Image 1 (cartoon, rainbow, N blue to C red):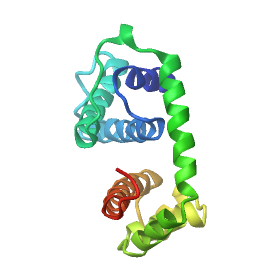
Image 2: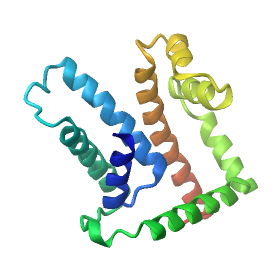
Image 3: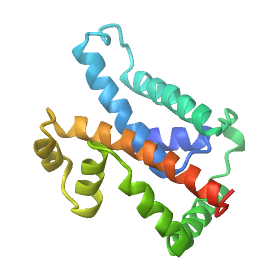
Length: 171
């Protein structure tokens, strides 16, 4: 189910792979929550249900980030998409070595309040598992910690984007 889901979103949205994976995780969290709330009793096709949730989340993401969905599947050029994605990742790698940008990132990270500060530090710097983080932060399970980590990442991405734009490093 994972590969068709990813391909479905890649065909219809100009969203990078990491964001698609976040959407994938969030869809499964929503599925679990909807099952617990008994909102899935009328579901005839689980695949359609899951893809529909993914579509809705991708539309919200695209609206927030100004990515415009391409509904015409026949015009999707996988090779061009992968080439563009690879070029984007290479450009990101070169940005990571920019000393000005590293300074901005360090400054923005120092202003992150808890729980985001702890979760991001545990996950990225101490390389702890989501289960360990959930235990350390007294969350009910690793999925809860992962949802909070994803929200924290969105916040820090926005803070860093704004800081970098203010400094004129990126457009």
